Amino acid sequence: MKSELLLVLALFLCVSSKPLSKRKMNNKLLLISFDGFRWDYDQDVNTPNLDKLVKEGVKAKYINPPAITMTSPSHFTTITGRWIEDHGVVHNLMFNDTTGLRVPHKATLKRSEWWDNGALPLWITAQNQGLKTGSFFYPGGGVNYGGQAVDRSLVADHGHPDDNETEWRQNIDTVMGWFTKDDLDFVTLYYGEPDNVGHAFGPETPERRKIIEQIDRTIGYLREAIHKSGLTDHLNVILTSDHGMTTVKKVNEIKLSNYMSLLNLTRFDLLDYGGFGMITPREGRQQEVYDALKNAHPNLTVYKKEEIPEHFHIRRHERIQPIVLLADLGFNINSRIILYINKGDHGYSNEEMDMKMIFRAFGPDFRDNFLAEPFDSVSIYPLMCKLLGVVPEANNGSLSDTKDMLVDNSDAGKHLIRLSEGAPLKNGLFHQSNRL
Ligand SMILES: *[C@@H]1O[C@H](CO)[C@@H](O)[C@H](O)[C@H]1NC(C)=O
Ligand SMILES: *[C@@H]1O[C@H](CO)[C@@H](O)[C@H](O)[C@H]1NC(C)=O
Ligand SMILES: *[C@@H]1O[C@H](CO)[C@@H](O)[C@H](O)[C@H]1NC(C)=O
Ligand SMILES: *[C@@H]1O[C@H](CO)[C@@H](O)[C@H](O)[C@H]1NC(C)=O
Ligand SMILES: *[C@@H]1O[C@H](CO)[C@@H](O)[C@H](O)[C@H]1NC(C)=O
Ligand SMILES: [Zn+2]
Image 1 (cartoon, rainbow, N blue to C red):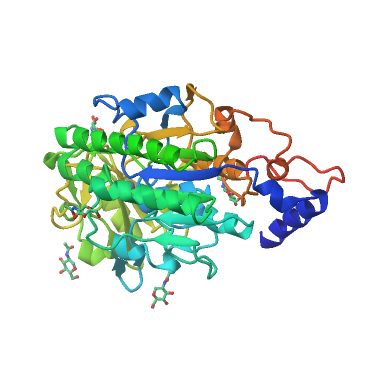
Image 2 (cartoon, rainbow, N blue to C red):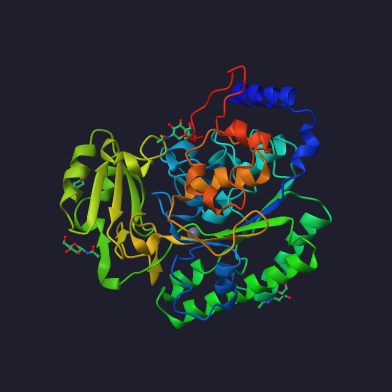
């Protein structure tokens, strides 16, 4: 893969007279993720700023997260354009099924060995092509890839409050400074809400509506900040999330110890994290685990790893354990005791409407008043590459999902982009599929 990239770069340098100055013609890009922002959260709240963005930008009715609807797996799909089985970040926790190690989510954000599995995130690819990038709390932005760090990176500490509106604004000011004073080209900015409130109170509550109003004010502040920084005509913004949220009822708990002896049959598990679970059976006990759970509960689906439907795009990775469990919407998979007391949760099938997430975009390269069809979040990556003029890594997204959002979706001058889309060079040396 590396040598292919070098070839592409070499070809580019041969056919272009001024490669570096050309790159500067691209506008800057800010990717903002509000964790757990379900696609319809703006529909029962007064959100004047988000409403304004419908007229002054692009809205997708909703977009599809990848099949493990959890924070780290989904964010890493957005920033790499790869399915979960191809990027390997299969859970919010780093774990080792041999030693039983489980690293808490916040600590996992600092462990390169969990993230650096060969799929290069866009920060690193862009840096290797001469751009400057930054990550403000975005999952995966705080570690090294092949020893290389993101130019500017901040990682939230354990216990960092997620809902402080004053700090939210300061973070926007910091990011504006990164673009203007430090001349960064691409920044990812992450907010931990409305996920926390969705878990703690549930999605259909006044508390959730209140935090959406706070997010809406923050978007208003962002637009003012962009204007004051002189970036209105030079900065594109994509606003999205990682998954939705659904109401969990206490009565919907599925306690696996009711159906089997976890101690006798399993040597490792990732249970008690909502609607998605994995089990590592003891040597020779896989069929017993499977038989015990297969028809245990009408709202629990049990897969042997090899049975997981192909279209989930998770089963090829070695970190996926031999037994995978998926609960119906609103049900919780617990092991021995009911540990998980959230009123809202995610982790359910990405086909459920409650797991779908928000997508908005605005800036000089985006059309106004454009309603996009739903698409897979994996396709945000080739869109970001096109906006930045970066040659994408091999990925699972498709620019055809998003290119109609752009003002000029056939820009013949953007040489890098035409290469990356597989346009053959005159000498026919370059050939790639269009699903990069
Ligand atoms: C898990 O830990 C064992 C023992 O330290 C180690 O040999 C193995 O490589 C680890 N597995 C992974 C996937 O890191
Ligand atoms: C919110 O953030 C501001 C700015 O960082 C800080 O001064 C303030 O103490 C914080 N408030 C709370 C309740 O943490
Ligand atoms: C677990 O194994 C032990 C020892 O073989 C046995 O006594 C016990 O009944 C088993 N427990 C269950 C729930 O199967
Ligand atoms: C739980 O399973 C029952 C039986 O299959 C089904 O009728 C019900 O719709 C399921 N609940 C959910 C929330 O999917
Ligand atoms: C996803 O992209 C990777 C890298 O090109 C490729 O190896 C893999 O086969 C793709 N997955 C699917 C399902 O097309
Ligand atoms: Zn999340």
